[in-house]
Structure formats: C-alpha cells, structure tokens
Image (cartoon, rainbow over the protein chains, first blue to last red):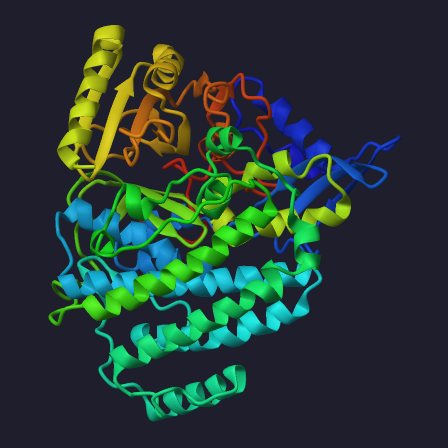
Length: 422
Length: 172
C-alpha cells in the first residue's frame, strides 16, 4: 500500500495524514469481542456496494457503507460532452429508471433556455416517467420478495413487467435506455398502431395469468386503447400481489418493525422518495413543485406511518397503483399536436446561468444543479441522486439488528449502487 | 401554492437575512423557476445556516455542490463555490422551494466549517465535496473519502485543472 500512500499529496494543511489513516483503516480490521467483515461488493444481497459490518455475535453494532465501486465520473463527463450528447450517458446511473434520471436534466436545460415543451410532449413524458416508475418498483418488489424468502413474487413481478417494458419500447424505441427526453419535447411521437404480434402476445399472457379472455374478445390495436388494456390488466394483477406478498405472514414477520426510521430522523437526514413517505412525511416533487402535465392529473401521494421496512414497501406498492391511474388519465387527456419544438443540433448553445431543477424519479426526488457559461457544454453539472441521499440512512438503520435483517433493510431502501455512485 | 405567494415569502426571508447579517450577505440571485441563491461570506455561513434552520424551519438538505470558478469565461476567480441546496418539510409555506445557500473558499486554502451540526444529512454530501474538490470541512464527524478508490493519487477530479486521461486536448 505504501506505493499508493506516498503519492497522496493533494490534501492541504495536514490532510495528507488523514488520507493515510483512512486507507489504513480500510485495510486493517480490529479483532476482539467484536468481528468486522465486509458485506459485498460481491454479495448478491448488496450489488456493487460494500458495507463494513461490525458484529457482536449475531447483532450488528456498526455499519459503514462504502460506495464507489461503480463510480463513473458522470459529473466530470458532463463537462466534456455537449448539452445534447449528455442525455444518453446521464441515464446510465439508473437504467431501470432512465426517464426519472434524465427528467430533471431536461427540465433544467429547458429552464436555462427559457422554453416550454408542446402540450403533447408533456403528456408523453408523464406516461414514460410513470411507466418507468412502475418497472423500477416491480424490480424492487421482486427482489425484496427474493430476500424475504418469497421467490414467487420475483417471477410474478418480472413476468408482468415485460408488458410494461414492451410499452416503453413502443413509445420510446428501446426497452430501458431510450434517451427519450430532449430539451423542448420528446424525441419522437408515440405510434398510432400497435404491432399485431405484441397484441397477440399480450392476449396470450392475459389468458394465462387471469384464466379468462380479455373482456371485449380482442385487444384493440389502437395505441390509446392498448395502453388502457395493459393498465387495466396490471391493476388487476396488483390486487393479486397484495394477498400474495404484502399480506403474507412470512413477509410481515420479516419486515414489520425492522429498520425503523422515525419521522424527524427522516427529515433531518434528508432522505427521499418511498423512504421519506414510509416515515409519514407527505412530500412528493410532483405535488410540491409541479412540472409538465402533473398539475392537470389527479393522483394521491401514499404515505405510511409505520416508519419500518414494511411501510416503505407498502408505499412502493401503492405508488404503482397511483402510477397506473396517472398513465390512464394521461392517455385519455393527451392532445394531438407536435411533440418537440425543433430538432436541436448537438452543438446547441445554452444561455449562461444557474439552475436547480427537481423531478420525482422512481426512488425519490432527483435534482440537478447546472451552471452554464454560455458555450455548447455545461460548466458544471451536479446530480443529487435519490440513492445517494438515502445512503446516509443506512448506518442509522443497520444497527442493533440481526445479520439476517441486513438484506431486508437494504432492499427496503430501494438503494441502487450505480445511481448513488454516478 | 401559487408562485406569487412563494415569491412573497422568499422576499421576506431575504430581507430578514439582509437586516440581520448586513453586508455579509454578498449576493442574492432570485430567478423564478431557476434558482434562489444566497451568497454569504465564509465567516458567517454557519450562523446563517443556523438562523435559517431555527427561524425559518429550513430543515431538509437536498445536496451540496462544489464549483471550481477558476475557468469561468468572464469573472474567473481562484475560488471554489460551495452551495448547500436546502428546503423545508416542516413549513407548509416553504414547501417546494429550494434555497441555494452558498459561500466561496479560496483554492489556496480550501477550508470551511462543516454544517453537519445543523443539517445532519450533509454528512455524505460533504464527504463527496471533500474528495471531489479537496475542500476540508472543519468539525465534520467523519471526513473520509467516499466514492474514489483508495489508491486514487491524482488531484481532486472535479477541479478544473484536473485533466481527464485521454481528453487532455479538450476543453472541459
């Protein structure tokens, strides 16, 4: 290690010493009545993320999260790429929720430019963002099922998710990383007709899952009607999830009262999304600072007062129900018309200024601070991603719990390492 | 909540800060829908933060940004700007407003007081600024690196003088 240590010289005023000690403390673990070990980064329960756990017997006394295994330097990369070519790489931190990640960036650039997207684009963005929220939450619910010892949930979630991902592909052209949002609108319009093959597959799946034919006999190939059909189907499936997972004694026993984050702690730690709402705080960017078509749509913000892992999962579950409602309304209300102001060249220049824009991504509020110096590249882009803001809750929650509860708490935070590391 | 009501509250907040801290509030930049930025002198940032929290119920931290100002095309200065994006969840009137409280530290001596005592959630954000821009936060409970690898030995990567390997000739 000395080879590396000798070169850490950039910390001014005695910081050098701190850096050395820091490296040392990462390498050497004390032994004694306590045992310290690494959970991750190869552990399937954490993903590309490590926790340094100290235990006494089976009880965790300290958890030190160590992110950074998938740090890609997105913020620095933004300074080298142009305003438009930044969009595809900015969705990489959370590919499951690409819309949620690029939404605040696009809003920020639009506010700097002083433009508003056309009405139809606003609705298409809302539909896309909500579809991705459902896809991301289904992934979350499925993985949580696995770690709570409930493998059926995993299969169900991933089976149903497929039809929503198909819908994403139909609108944006790609299953997950679609780069659909551009400053001044969306990249392309939704198709008016749905391919026959897709409808056929959906009908087969519908019959398989619900044991009956789709009521009207045939699923329409009209885009609007097809989206409504998929939404109705998914809503019915969500009703079946409740007794299967959320009302199941195994799941309740594993999650109720585990990882309690009190309301005042949630606020002072600055957590976001389902973690915040699971602690009884009614805060949602879509309501607090409404953007695009959200002011025209009626929906609730579910909150739970349990403050534990179970509450957080329930918030996620109810959010999917609300998202289905939003998509249905948006599809019904969506006007005809253009979907973008104009096709921007990649070397577009953005007026100098500063902006702080937020949007509600699947994991919570995602914010961008952008500083422009008037050239074709941003001067500084800061991503305040929801997982990074939830990271601080981890050492607070993973304390005085059993080792077996670690994956439960970890997954109840819906933590996504790549989104945190950026 | 209508925008005008929010603007009115913000106006009162800024007047209050100005009357209390005088010329130590260096610059106020309120642009509707864009940013609400209050630039204060380094020596009073902790007092301003404490005042905002106790008097205006600004209790929710959203992020901490560091910006290297040394390559700005006009008005370049050898300083780092540290911005705390904060909001409120307890105050219904200030919901949905983000205040960017900022201060400047010089590049030659990048030391500033930590605000973790006021906003506990700033802990990870300050650690990130520490490793990415090399700013030392005095009074931080656990100032270690966060995202960069242990063997990282180059300068702070988000400073403008850090050259990304392979992109030396490009402006960034």
